[in-house]
Structure formats: C-alpha cells, structure tokens
Image (cartoon, rainbow over all chains, first blue to last red; front, side):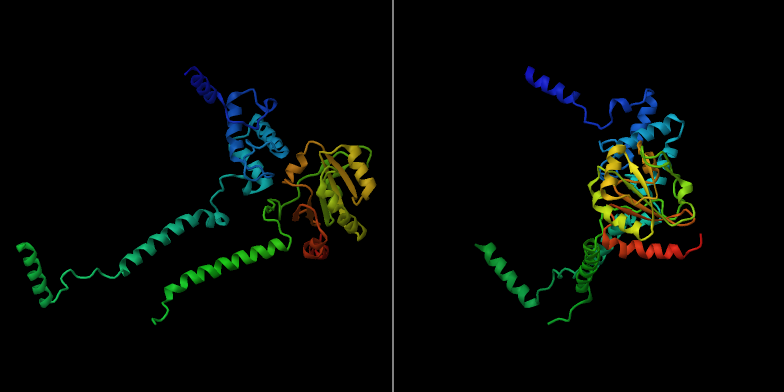
Length: 154
Length: 185
C-alpha cells in the first residue's frame, strides 16, 4: 500500500519533459507564460512535427530565445508571431491560418462530410422500395389459411 | 448482362485521380525534390540586411552593399555540415564560371571554416560570420546549406534548401541566372 502511494506521488510529480532550459526562462512569470504559449504554437522547422517548446534542436532554442527577447522588448503576442512568420512563412504556425492557399486544407473535411451526406441521401432514395407485405395471390392466401388452421387444430 | 451503370465509374475515376497525383509526386521525388523542403517566405521580397563581421582572419566581412546591383548567390554554410562539403565542388564550379557567390558562415569556429576553404577552395566574393545565427534566422534558414538567389534589385528570387547538386544547376540555377542576368538592375 505504502509503495503504491509512493508510486502514485511519483507519477503525479513527474512533469512532462520540456526542452526549455533554465537559462532561457524569463524572470517575469507572466512574460514567461506568454512565451511558453507562443512557443507551443510555433513549429520547429528542423524536426517539423514538434513545437519549438518541445524541440531541443539548435534552431528551436534560438527561436525560443528570440520569442522571449521580443516579448521583453514589449511586443504583443501578435507581433511576435508576425516576426517569425515573416521569416519562415505560415508553415511555422502549427495551427495554419485560414486563407486562400489553405482553403483545401480547412475545407476538405467539411467538403467530404457534405459529399458523404449527399451520397447517403441519394443511396436512401434510390434503395428499392421494400416488397409489399400483401403480395400473396388469393389462391396462396387460401392455402396459407388452411395450413394455419390445420396447425391450430392439432 | 446489364449495361455498366455510370456510378460504377466513380471508383474507377477516383482511382485514376489518386494514381495521377501519386505518380506526379513520385516522379518529382525521383527527380530530386525533397518533400520536406519548404517554400521561402522571402521569395519576391527584399533580401534581409547583411551586416556580418568577417570570419576571423578573412577579409572585411559581409554587408548588404556588396551584393547590391548584382545577381548574387548567398550561401549559408558551415564547416561542420556534411552536405556543405558535398556541395562545395558545385559552388567552386559556379565561381569559376563567373557567378557572384557570397558566404554566410553559420555558427562555426573561424579556424575550422578557414581550414575548410583552404582545403576545398574559396568560391566566395566575400564572407561573413554569423556566430549568433541571427542573420540566418532573418533569412528564414532552417537547414544547411541553403542558397538564395538575389536579383539586381535586391529581391530574393529563389531559395535552395540543402546542397546544390550538379543536376540542380541545369534544372534551376542556370536558367534562373540567365533570366536574371538579362533583367535591368
């Protein structure tokens, strides 16, 4: 039991590993929090599927430092993003902006959904109507009645 | 047998479209395109400023004025970067053919950089040291080497990520240089 508690405490205290090094961290906690938020939205171009907050690539470190410098110099978050995007393009943003060049990217899921719904609607409409229940001939009906009666009579 | 209904052609058409897309991309990759290469944000924009100190013991450094009015190739390299070594003979060839090359030496030890040039030749008109890596970030560099083609008006026209290989010369570099050379400054 005691062991389980220790393991639990250990798991709770285990923070996810981050690439940010102590000497990069700003003294002002509010600024640092903004820097972390921005860093999580910026792609590390060396590894391409990590944010600069996660990556320990050299370039990611340099960009983290630049983000903090810009914030310390009084830039708004938007200005910091603009600074990085003007150099590295939209691809550096992990959340791509909606614009004409990304229309396919953002529109495709919606488009596919609409196509799926249309397809489903057409399929439902075209489906052959279920056979009429009342499709027995008079003769068949009479025979069926006779058979059922015979069953009941047993 | 029933005649083929048009809707049976839908999967066939979808297959053909996909096969075409895959085919085009595969042929691009086998033609030397790297799918992780990114478009530069700088194409069609003025080249970022260059104001670099020299690689210790080599000339005056590199400043924007030096590339002004010329068709210039700005190459970002380092002696520790293996593809840079691979690319170097191509740069030497361009320099011999009269192309104006300017070097940005990225986060390198000066003695290592100069030893590299002493061994393989120096193709650069001028060379600057980017110790902090800030100039490279201004140019949007993320892989080494990278080469930018800047026209006579100082506008970035092309960016090449990774080493320029001989086949890239005919495919991209020569036609572009020819076109830019004919433009008025």
